[in-house]
Image (cartoon, rainbow, N blue to C red; front, top):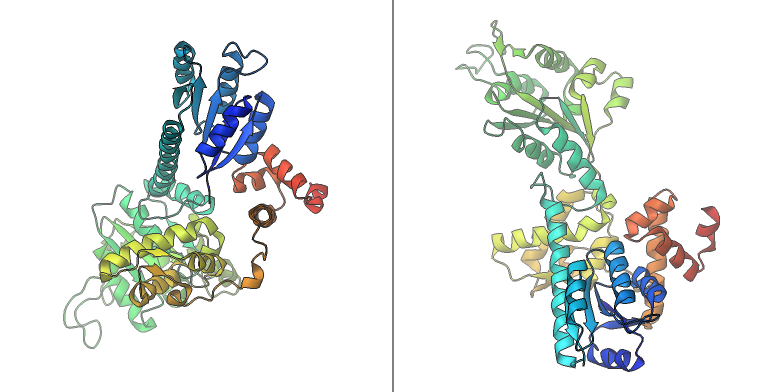
Length: 453
């Protein structure tokens, strides 16, 4: 999408010159304080060129500096290039002190202003990418995601990492519960001790007890030597019990005693063995419903669920889908020494349209296959095993203004529903201010949203 540059200047000749100089960008104009702030709110440009000598006081820089102050206050990341008269260096330096990115003295040279704008735009994009990366990688580095849904969960996990409180990770299969468990362990005081994981659903019922608690020599046929279990193996560290909802009801009583007393007895043993570990459990099942059905002990539920954390499914993390896809693409490209480097636009749209019932695990599988199967450096929907978005769902018009209106209208309606019809939350999801949102609603005649507010 073409970047927008806002030119604030009351000289029509300068406006025309800048328009022809900046043909690679979408250039919009303003000639006073009111129109400058309106254009800033509407287009959210990353770069603004600002003439300091504006009416009602064109002979001085007071109005230009006032606009600069308001731009920095409303959009502090915006890069403002101030344009001054040939002998007005003092005000240009004052503008830099106020937060302007750079200054340029008239007369305007097309190549020079183009270079300044390009540099400012590149810096803005770099700062934006670094901001996303810092939020994505802050705290729990294993967790990739910038959406509010996942960041809320990350903040909750960070708060409990330094404690030994029993944690219950809830979420659909494939949402990354073990990744969260490992991240909590790695950010805890136990990080230098073992992290031991066991899937309660993958081990036969008659073997799970001995796998967890270990067994003494001669405890049963084939027990030729004393063997410690997963719980003892995790001594000093973290035990991760995945799919605890599949734990047999008979074993739950022994697990409850261990969690309460922090001692275990091996199968066939009589000695109590003290154990110092942190326990993190996970399940995709509805444990509360299982408690009501008496298939899961209520006392155990409250013991393992001292701190529940619900991990959102991938379909509720729209803005993370492409970020995760690119992360996995880079990993698998290196692993398989493949040529694939990027996604086609149709592949991006197909991934955004897909519901991801298997969540992150499904994405990993599709990306592995795509990296191997892709013929060239660009991954297509077929490589991912996804259907391209139906062309009938796309606007038929080629007029860019109409395409933008359709896309923005759809985004507003989608955010409005996702925010439970709360306008402040809708504006936040869209990354705009409330006045900007109301302006767009008026612009696109979205009377149903306006009337329900």
